[in-house]
Length: 130
Image: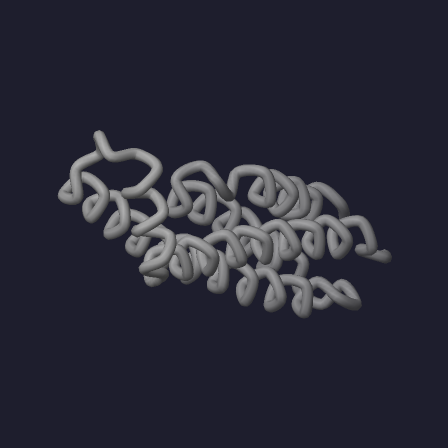
């Protein structure tokens, strides 16, 4: 049986997590950019420097969390697609898809829920189709 639908949904999930990886990288770029910090201070003088430093630190840790979680989700999705290709091990691939979708949505604090839905559907189809 061909598993084209599961593979396509997995690739869509990979692309979604790729966008989240780019978002995390952009957050890291903004955190390390002093020009952005100066521009925010100039435009909003009522914001204290301590508050701004707290926000910048939060962007750094959030950026790393998004980036690392998304890269792990992409790698696991590629593994699941490799396992499902040719209908080799669909049950294991479905398990990887489902676990990746749930943990990816949790660790990205809901940002990864849309690509997670695609992976969840793909994983469910791996179990449902024979």
